[in-house]
Each structure stands twice: as structure tokens, then as C-alpha cells.
Image 1 (cartoon, rainbow, N blue to C red):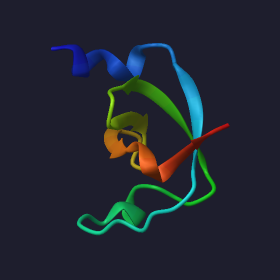
Image 2 (cartoon, rainbow, N blue to C red; image 1 turned 90 degrees about the vertical axis):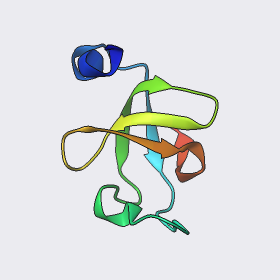
Image 3 (tube, rainbow, N blue to C red; image 1 turned 120 degrees about the horizontal axis):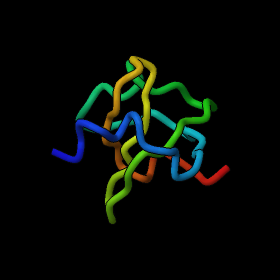
Image 4 (cartoon, one colour; image 1 turned 180 degrees about the horizontal axis):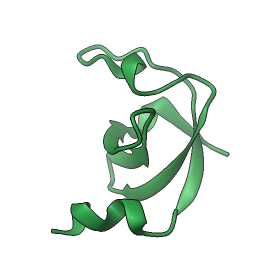
Length: 67
């Protein structure tokens, strides 16, 4: 399972969290506005980053901007 090795893979790039105003989920518990995060994987809709808990989390791209 590829997701089990994402944390050890090299970082693709860094992104900055621009907001945590989620309509459905409590994103502000694992992301901090203004903080940079390492992108480990990406799809058309999601970025998989190392969040504040130290684990990989998938978030909509709308929360981030390129650094």
C-alpha cells in the first residue's frame, strides 16, 4: 500500500496554508493558517501533507498556495 510509505518519500514541494474555513470538517485542529507544509503526494483535488499531528493528511487544494 503506497500510502504507508509517503512519510519516508522525498517532499514534492512546500505549500502555505491560507485559510482553515472548512464547511464540513474541523480542519483548524490539524492545520495552522500561515504555516508551511511538506507535500508528499497530490491528486487533482487533494494535497497530502504532513499536518500538525505529524501524520499525513489529505486536504482540498483550496486551503493552500504555492510557496
